[in-house]
Image 1 (cartoon, helix red, strand yellow):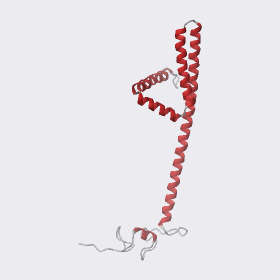
Image 2 (cartoon, rainbow, N blue to C red; image 1 turned 180 degrees about the vertical axis):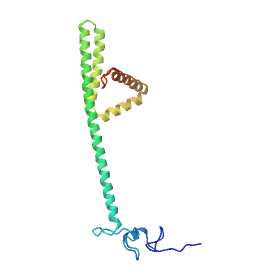
Image 3 (cartoon, rainbow, N blue to C red; image 1 turned 60 degrees about the vertical axis):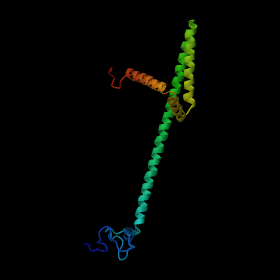
Image 4 (tube, rainbow, N blue to C red; image 1 turned 180 degrees about the horizontal axis):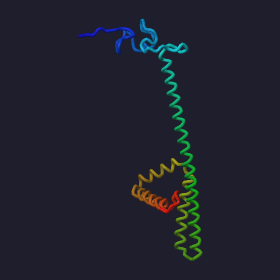
Length: 184
């Protein structure tokens, strides 16, 4: 059984005049249909009667939102990068001061005629100073690439170093005073 087709503004979905498309109803180009007849919304007098202008406005707003999001993401990334570079420089300075302290310990040991231990501390001070210079001279992405490369070559050592750093950091955090002022 076939149902009769109603043609015109009261037609249901998918019931268009022969050759007419949904877009032609929206733009008013279907025969006998005025703009707004399908949607029931007449365009404002100062707006063009085409649906394309609404789409272009929506597209423009979408483009503005996407551009603002990209700009915000770029600003956040730049801010984080700047902060990390500043932290890297501070860490290099602190490591440099540790190297100086180890070196002065070596000098004091040497003055006490303990040259064997003094040589070991000088060697340690040289290594710590090299680490400080490395951090100061390299950018963050190069440091990350070097760490990844080392971890691929020596995964067991990398895990051991990460564990040791974690234990030292946990011990440091545990020994630092709490914000509430109580003893933990």
